[in-house]
Amino acid sequence: MRCRILSATLLLAGCGGPLSTLAPSGPVAAEIAWLWWAMLAGAGVITLFVLGLLALAFGRPRETSTRRWTHGLGLWFSLGVLTLLLGAGLVVGERILPRDDGAVTVRAHAFQWGWSFTHEGADGAPVESAGLMHIPAGQPVDILITSEDVIHSFWVPRLAGKMDAIPGRTNRLRLIADSPGVYAGLCAEFCGRGHAGMRFDVQAHADWPPENWPPEPERGRQ
Ligand SMILES: [Cu+2]
Image (cartoon, rainbow, N blue to C red; front, side, top):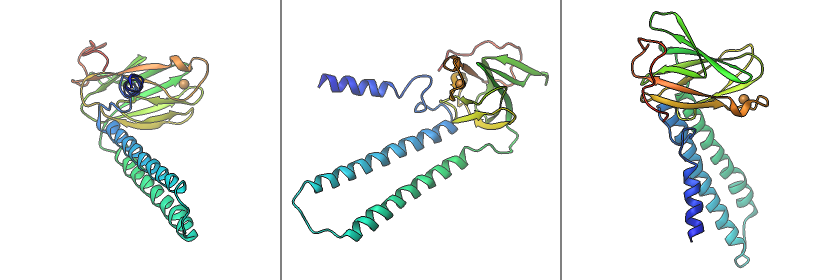
């Protein structure tokens, strides 16, 4: 019993922390977390259903219709599940797309093995930073993502999904931070021996653009 409680505690502990998709801190990340929970619930129901069928198989022999199994379960059941998944994925995917609504843009440039960021300062001039990206809190921000060498992937789990950084191409990702603070980010695509250390932070500011650079941290990492 003690072992079960310990296992459950360890499993639940994995759902939190600064790099957890399941602790969203903005509407884009919340949509993704919702999809994750919906898929987990669906997978749970299907697992129970299959276990039920397995229990039936161990029961006494009975007359069954081959057509019911091949068409009902093999075809319609699978098609129903896949259609639901596809529909939910399309709805969530459409909701989190960047839109042409005048959102603040910040550039994120990946290289082996680090990140540099550029955003507009208070005087309109570009401001560069390394390893720390500045964004406004409470409003949509579009990240324009590029790479210098190989394919990397930009990921701030508590604010949005992943987006590849591809040499010669600019990809766009929308993220929104509900409140000011520091959020952890990382490269989510293996890119060489320094990949594991390719971390960065995102600082969301209440005032935008901040008056003085470099700005003072507003709160510790969330
Ligand atoms: Cu990497």
